[in-house]
Amino acid sequence: MIDGKLGVAIHGVGKVAYAHAASWLKNPHCRIVSVSSRRRESAQRLVDKLHLDCEVADSFDAVLADPRVDIVNISGPNHVHTPQAIAAAAAGKHLMIEKPMCISMEENLSLREAVARAGVRSLVSFVLRWNPLILNLKSLLAAGAIGELFYVEIDYWHGLGESWTGWEWGHTLASGASTMLTGGCHAVDAIRYLTGLEVAEVSAFANNKKGKFEYPANVVAILRFADGTIGKTSALFDAEMPYTFNIDLAGTEGTLRDNRIWSKRLLPAQTGWSTMQTILPDSAAVDHHPFDAQMSHLVDCILQGRESHCNVADAYKTHEVCIAIDRSIAQGGRPVRLPLEL
Image (tube, rainbow, N blue to C red; front, side, top):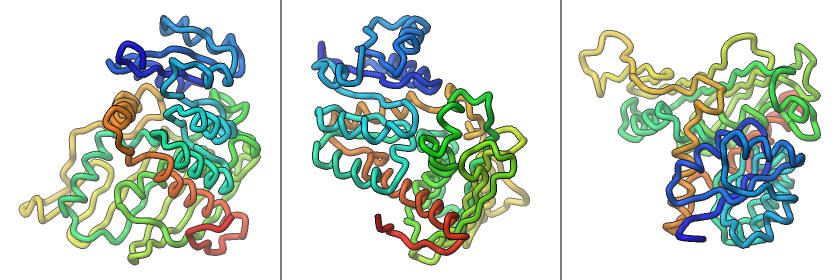
């Protein structure tokens, strides 16, 4: 720390990095000390656009060697997240890692072990955990508003194509890896976070109707939880519609559908759906995501010496489910049990 502030280095300058940087700027306990990327001109462009008072670092090695850097914000293409995060942890830097944090089970395990060994704080960018609707649903479930949960369904429908700023690397098997890891992981993580349950078995199918991606673009998976709860998740990259994040939670005494509530326990004279006035996860725009709250959460964890509920160890389980879904697809829908073996 310098002058009582945590130094942040942003490495990887895709579109989401602009939103990350804007949020770091708002936090009074931080200052951005460097920006870097595969192409120096990309990093310079972010610095100029946001009028940052910081340097453009020449390399990732230079970032890790910089004593002013306390937090490394890793936001490059998917395939670099794990090796960069492992190197940053070994250098004693705290981590903010864009999702997915890994693209294989081997990387998933290696990263979890590296962060545990280094003892640094970490946060994986499942930013929807701070979305106001998700926070409200979490509170309603905890209060028993719908009784005992027995079914959960969350979907990530986001049509992607050549206009996507991450298309160059994101549509490839080598970096994008899969629909679930690239985007559907948000839905899987929301299922885990809202229910507090862990998936015991998955069975999944997929297709690639438009043929734009090197991996199946459209996925649906059935989930079985250890306590008998069942669920479904899907991710559609070929979707021709506005971005949609469907949420359905069915319990023994009520149901939650997006921001609609049916709960005789809470509203005994209810005659129709009641609607929450809140902010929904209904946009793919990065400036719509609650990064301010996410970054503040990580800073609080660092300053207070505590672990995040969205750290690498927890995100390991979300990625494990996504990889299990991909394995089931590769095996023609055959059920795959968790935990996974390498």
